[in-house]
Image 1 (spheres, rainbow, N blue to C red):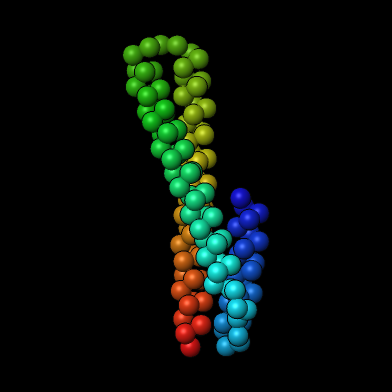
Image 2: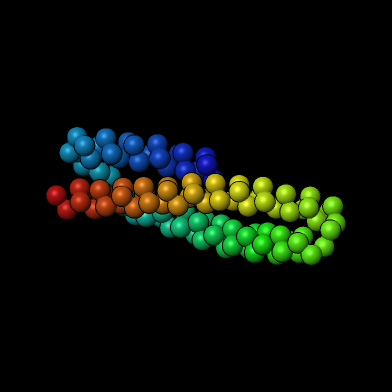
Length: 114
């Protein structure tokens, strides 16, 4: 996913240079960009659902560990906690990228109007 984001960000940088130089954009620029945004929105939704699920499992394990004293449960709690942290980090990347790409969509639209 990071490769996909990086490649499209490189493409966005090229488009922003064209916009700043008031040059014409290729005809399918907006459609291409919106397809990429749509794909990332889908990916973001899936990761949000997984993040919520992992969070529920983490809370359940934590509450269970308050009442049951099993070493394996504590180890599982730590592993799920690390997984939850990594999902939050990845979801943060997806969310910020989508917001940046929304701004780029607006730039393309404004440029095409002018």
